[in-house]
Length: 272
Image 1 (cartoon, helix red, strand yellow):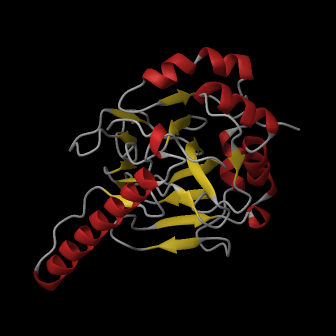
Image 2 (cartoon, rainbow, N blue to C red):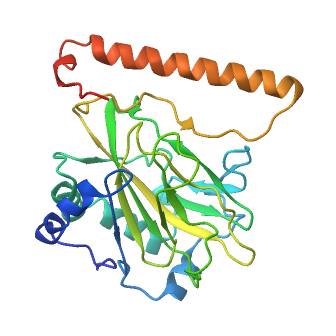
Image 3 (cartoon, rainbow, N blue to C red):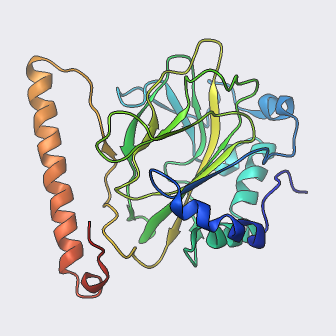
């Protein structure tokens, strides 16, 4: 039994030009993708004390919870994950993005169920590209929102898409029930939600990532997540933050040089 209104490969292909030309980087937004009542999904969503959750309390994503074990998820939500990793879904994503031979992640590393309560944020960032566990390369992110009763006029919790280095987003997407965002992920695709989740809401989603066995044509990042902003810091914390930023810059520079030095990739590197 299917619970999603997934586009066919032909329908996805018809959106490919819009995907490629979208600003600030390739993406598409699909609405009403879930063929279920919001109340049924809300009832199945695990409570904050469910043992499947991993809780994050760092300053970049305070209060965030992730459940990456599909076998520990309630059956209804696990079925949505399986549908999004099905051959039909992969064919649609390949037709949309022009990236062939996409591979889903059985381990849901960094993905699965996501939740952020009132006051939660996700600092704008770019994601890891090299998936060392399986020796793959991350190419596509998909986020399916499960938030019941979200008011689209409230900007809190909205996904924000940025030009690298920009202080303000180019595009925002309200995390309303059944909305799905698909975007090309690399070191030129900063995203997050800097405006806190409003009181009385919990921002819920399924986040899935798709990979290829072949490296991307241009440098797309390494094994690190690169946070775009870091907030205020004083004293020793400011010194440590400065060292952190310098070391990450050096790490990224070395990764870029390694990519350029690889004779199997160097001829395909795009101008930046």
